[in-house]
Length: 559
Image (cartoon, rainbow, N blue to C red):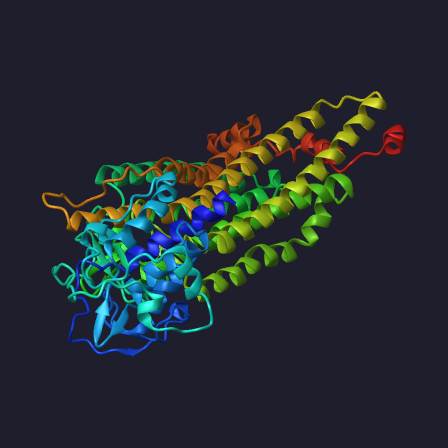
């Protein structure tokens, strides 16, 4: 439950940031006209007239209702019994005789005292934009915090006069402190993007909004270094298959296509390093270029193409992993021969290359593509990562692990049968060791990548909220240098996710790390004058496959 409340409070604070403008905008004054209240959240509080623009800078009640809808999680958190009255006094203020009545300072202090401890427990500051010192004192025309009896009366169906429902100090009207009209503008390192919200800010390209410049440089070098290592490792695997294709018969053949996927994926990361982050993941906005925001990824063609390649290749590699484990299972438990698996290869290819196309098209239609400032890469947005990225990869990974465990159990039974027959099981044990190590070298990094993605999808919105809050507060503070003031606590997780997503390609070449590979390359590089030695189609490998296909005790006895 604590995690649920945490998410709800974070959503509320984010919406407060989006509704920025309470002290940096004009405000309702005596010239405003009263209009009928249409904000559903504030109905039943004893008044039916309000005025716009309100004290949050909303121009109409539709904008005010959008802001209040985003604040519903904070209302459900129920940190203050005066929260609803306070929010309505700010978003849909009471209008009496064409005068908008703001919230009093004691009402703000009451809400702050009740809600700030909950925010502090989540290391969230109380926003400067809601500084209670800027609300009018009790000696002016403003909304006071009602006593408990009055609060219970406001929930009744009756609609008495406004003076009975809302404790209002009826002196002279008050004007909130005037300030510059910047409520529709973002901080200097951010750019406003078109959105249904009142304000939507994304990092400006070429500026340091969420991360420091040295963090971004290190992340780029880290990513490019592992991409080159993955490229060289998978390239060696592919060349080894070209030199001696007979070593990669089914059920081992999917390893080649797994290496091909990571070879192309590492090439995409290398291309990102060559073209730079801004050429790939930036889009033009009204006030300049910014990193591609959520639901706007299709505006940047390079961003869309790179994301399609990365998402598709990652899904294909996961499907090939599942097929590889399934082939091992068919060969070990159901005694499918290499020829039998080769006969269904067309169906395996159709599944591995065709199914991810459907999943990729579905995510493309959802338009949940966003650019990351740290890496300059285009990826699924944090809000949709659980459904569009974690769920399909986890499903295929789990299915492959089930297949691998069943195949391992079948091999253990074969080993027991071989040893009970008095035969040597050394080669079978060596094969089992290689299969187990290869499976772990794929499954563990893939599982770690999914864990990092889940962690970032929950934590990154909080980082962005803190960074934007700090930037907004910096605008209201003298001698404040704009830039990221909060440490990027998720930097290590992001770097770990990059490493785990590329190290799979490095370890995929483990299957060719053997003496047979050295002999195959030596035959290729041998002098032409030497008579070519006829290739032995791996008699040892035939023995491995016979054992791998699951010898039963009665077949061993016959042998």
